[in-house]
Amino acid sequence: IAGITQAPTSQILAAGRRMTLRCTQDMRHNAMYWYRQDLGLGLRLIHYSNTAGTTGKGEVPDGYSVSRANTDDFPLTLASAVPSQTSVYFCASSDGQGGADTQYFGPGTRLTVL
Amino acid sequence: GQNIDQPTEMTATEGAIVQINCTYQTSGFNGLFWYQQHAGEAPTFLSYNVLDGLEEKGRFSSFLSRSKGYSYLLLKELQMKDSASYLCAVPDSNYQLIWGAGTKLIIKP
Image (cartoon, rainbow over the protein chains, first blue to last red):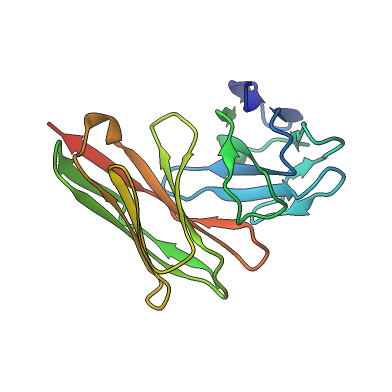
């Protein structure tokens, strides 16, 4: 059992390009989340999904979009990348339908936008 | 609003005990989480407290005081592998986690 996988592991991207970060979980968890982590700041929630077919905005959603077509996959898309989106991105999942459940994290994607 | 405060960095000696504090302000309370994050890796769950008091799990214990908006993580018999960042998090009114910036713990031999 892999848990949560993310792809790519790292990416260097030119500003203005479109990029999709992939996240897949095999735990049949209802809820999934996307966070960004920047030096000196806590994890910040970008978007979340409490169950397949639904999504919600987190603390820092601007410039990002998500979809949740099925239980396992939760891709994050940057429509037109900007340098301020340089960060480490973590996908997470939890068994329930809310953030008060224990969250399990993927290994992260390190994204650099030039 | 929501706010979480943790010390930025702490240093301790191998074999010793260290206490990492976390204070929080929330409009409601639905528990408090502690996660461990080694450099370059993902956060991993350590503990969840929803009632006041101390919960012990081997070398790690977590304490909560809801009336004081305060929690601490106690690490005993420190090992070099405990060098990591320790993240405190509380759910907001929508049950989404609000995270502290983390405390980087440096263990010296």
